[in-house]
Image 1 (cartoon, rainbow, N blue to C red):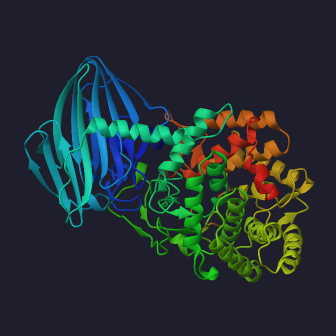
Image 2 (cartoon, one colour; image 1 turned 180 degrees about the vertical axis):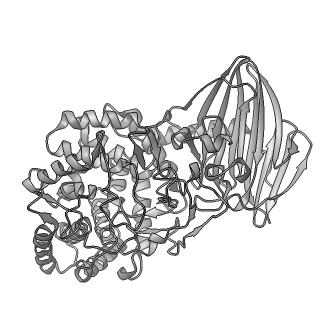
Length: 606
């Protein structure tokens, strides 16, 4: 079994260039990298298989102690290996994309003299395609791997040789010495890239990230955690369009050995508002504006054809298929490429988009006639479809239901349109919408609330609980002090809480079309503590927040879920949904912050 097969999800760190990203293991192996975009085929897919499916390892020949950290305020990873022979650092980064996309790996001697080995296995097409490899043996050595439209070029400071499926090199680094490797992607029909000045590239990359981080306006006790989450969110933004991918990976399991493995390298609308507020509240208005404009472009067209997710540039067809030659992370098959949920009908999308566009106006983003036109069209569509069943926030692959959260978010769509029209004098049938809003609210309370349980329920007529109900007070449908909201919170605490964390729902009780079993959902756990804060239980909320911070890995990253029994992160990684939840909760809990997303959303006013 190779290192990638033994490595846990939380053992990885992220580096990226604003258009794609790589995952680097604690042992110094790049086991995941898609080029040239987040959603492109991987050339290193060892994360989902074996070393033969692609990876790039740089490790000391003698094992020892490993410590790693990001350089403060940056996405530059510094892994320090302490061996009996000495100490050496491996510095990994991807310069912000200008023309070519590059992965730079610098080996720096800190003390003694350390021998290392580099092993490069390039496999295009998610590990399926063996490239044609050629070498120029001059120094620095140049290796080129080509297959079809793709080419990667390695500039190496040491001689390289073929050894089975891998390209091998050895190096020795003494204190104060530096050896640098640069792997560059380019289309195969273009001229090969030239070597770069690595030290200059490192300095400019560090300056870029420090300048970006310096714009953060958060003040409070969790500055480091918020900054790291914001940097992670920035790393998941596809720079050319402003779209934000849910995660950098596909098919990392929500249950080891299970089938809940999905492709998250696309842009979901499900957390549009909290994402927007997190960016604006922290001072990142440019990224918030780009996200708003991406939303408007992606949704342009018939409201009846609105999707729950899109590609990085707004692509609509995200056809799902299986890479059958990959065994999956920790044997979790199938490995899915694409996501069939793009075809699902989810009513909550309309509320998320309407809320995001409303808060963009309230937050001072430049007015957009297109955004109001889109919002008005979506609201008109909601009038006709809000009573239909759907697949819900969690994208169940079972039969459509009348999910309570979906109906609440349909109500949010109408409510925010009314507020926008009233406050900004925008043309709309406001009185008709107000009557609709009132009737929607009454119907949801009548059918989505179970008086016997004293709680809202997952779907109309159901007895099952769902963590999405925690959003009822957060979006302003009912106040936190309402007895029905308090009853819902108490029921979720009793039935969905596991070691302080919150599950989405009981997979044995919900007909979601899949085998049961998954971890606690981290975003739901952040919603729970936000509910505690709204209910005035601040000490409990702060205690839970501190506990959630301990679930981050050693470099501050979170996956989608967490297994409190095995104490392992689960699901795709790093997960934007989880980091947005962390940022929002930090603002909600910090006395120093005037901007509190839970208050902003429930009032509908920034």
